[in-house]
Length: 110
Image (tube, rainbow, N blue to C red):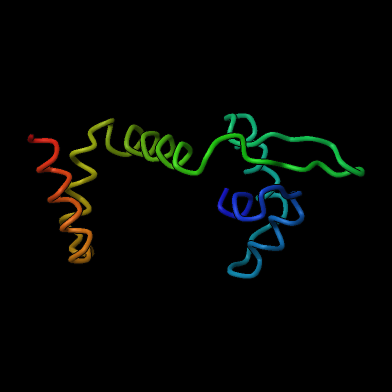
């Protein structure tokens, strides 16, 4: 999704080549994932010059929110507090991130 958001539209080959710059990945894996993202409604596919071109259907924040909710549901049985505790216990939050979390808690409590 990040590649397609950056490019605004892309073929499987373009996404594959962009991903190859940072890691090894199989072309078929990219094709499969893009098909899944299309079925989930995150991408739209159209035919252009014998190749399917994918465009994002939803904005980045919408997709990230949905993926986080799905992750929390699958990994933490829907308990987002467990995710927050896991992140806090990991001790990898920066001081800025800690301030943001504190601010969010204060806003919720008001």
